[in-house]
Image 1: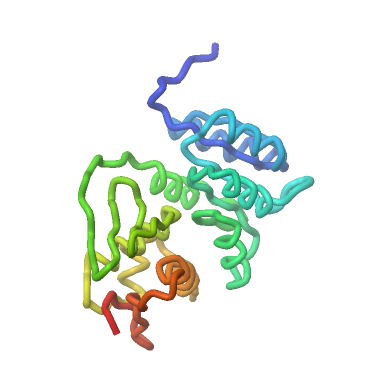
Image 2: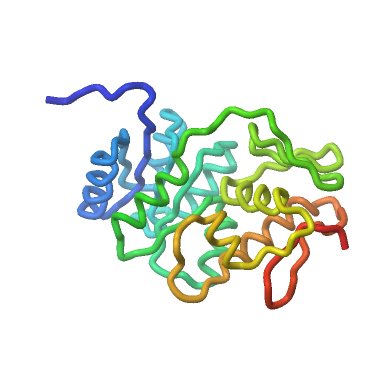
Length: 231
């Protein structure tokens, strides 16, 4: 017998061509209490995303027809800001850059691992605590309620991970933060081996907050990490 889930149940849209993998991921999500909608390709997924406005989208980079990267690009071009997790087969710097450039918020790797995946899903679907608090550093302001930055009157849209990274840096102004501290406090899960994920996100965050040629605020401390300070 089918049961109707309460309106408060987060809805996850899964865009996956591989039927066996889709069923595995779907079952894990359902058992964790989420409402699931599935689409077998990017075009169908885009239609579902527009019609249903899910809380989170999980999309495979490799799909029949248009790719997961195409899906993310099209979704963002339509102004849809729902968090997107991209499933990838490789973890090279080029792959991470492609993930960010497409507009995806984060990624996880194949082969699919239930616990690692669900930990990431919970990170993105944890309830928001309403707040009107704002963080400021110089001419940069971060609104914690809207997850938007503002610099010299210019509004800056951030992905969830960009927001969390900037928030952590602004909460510790002029304090040098190591890569290990940033990984632990922003990503919240362990990375296997060496990873340039912080460098990739810092690069794109800088591009956004320095878009009008503003002064650099996120400084690199070579061999250590990063610090929020004026040069």
